[in-house]
Image (cartoon, rainbow, N blue to C red; front, side, top):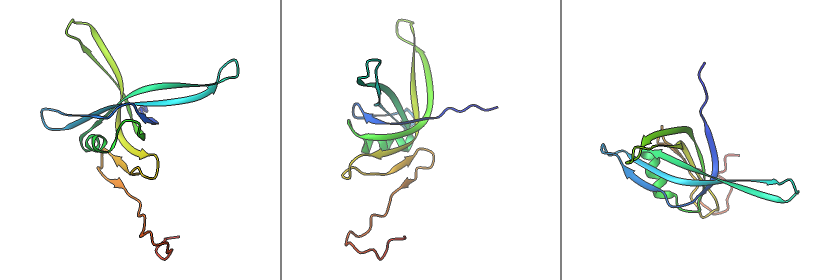
Amino acid sequence: MAGVNKVILIGRLGADPEVRYTNSGTSVTTFRMATSVNFKNKDGEKTDKTEWHKIVAWARLGEICGEYLAKGKQVYIEGRLQTREWEDKDGNKKWTTEIVANTMEMLGSADDSNRTETGQSGQEDNADVGTGDGSDSDVPF
């Protein structure tokens, strides 16, 4: 039976994304994202714990992340967990665990762009915001 490897995160970027390109020209964008959980400790005091996640976005999704995301922006990321292993220059084994994104949605205030990007299809969901004239004639409900 097949397993499930799915990660869903909502958090904020800790720094601007870094966009690089492979030798074949494919873009790969990396950024760190913070998620927090609030809870009461054993003394009943409200406490929060922040986890940092390394996000990797490839191809068109990576380009979009590099163009539209910035430090502090709130974002929804969906992807899969991946662990990579390598040897450093001294021969020591190193490894990292990261989330390979396949969907990104920008969240936040009204002045932020709200759009969804999917790495596989390259399609985006943009809501029709209307003309802004206050008329309800073209509202579908």
